[in-house]
Image 1 (cartoon, rainbow, N blue to C red):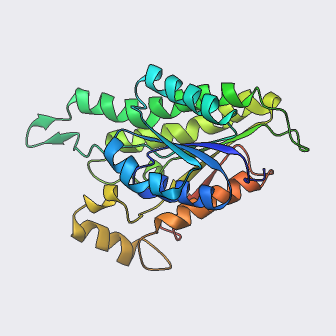
Image 2 (image 1 turned 90 degrees about the horizontal axis):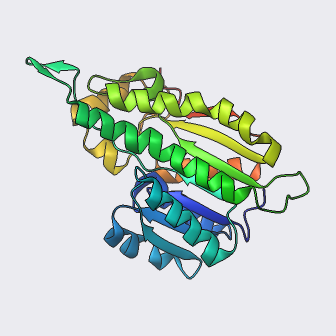
Length: 252
């Protein structure tokens, strides 16, 4: 799908992977509805991108909040063609630590944001996309979901995070099958260790060990523009569908 003049919906847009994605899509000529819980940071980081962006405070775990934002994007720009799910939280906690159990309210919140929130966007975005006129390939829309390398190689304290990101991968194929008749593609991206606000909360010793001993090459954290560049390619490459792409410098 050619990005120029499309309308994109990006969650987690105030920082990290989501913000970088907004920048790349705007540069490619898209109009973008950027959503996040952090409205102040949306205003300071996204609004300067120009008159092709709009911002809205959204809690992706709240279905009504997501529906309202998708409706606002369609009302403002006339359609929706691309959705990129970057909203997520880590919620680090060990299953059992010093006799204390992983609190179920934290488990539920991680799942609500990372998994259920992603599916809220998938549902309402695909509904909006289904109303689009198809392009020459019969394509009406593209959905990109951020998973994580933790889906396969989760670290200590990542039970909820890894489970939520593995589920994002797990739903990719069945959702692609559901949406194929509408000309809507869906792809998951599983980033490895990226330099974002989320990874900054990781102990330096842990992150450096991953860089030194797990990542094959290059020996560094990923950069948000590298994720955003892959999102652009996914949108533009009509033959990418129903798959998960690892973006992790060969981390093993």
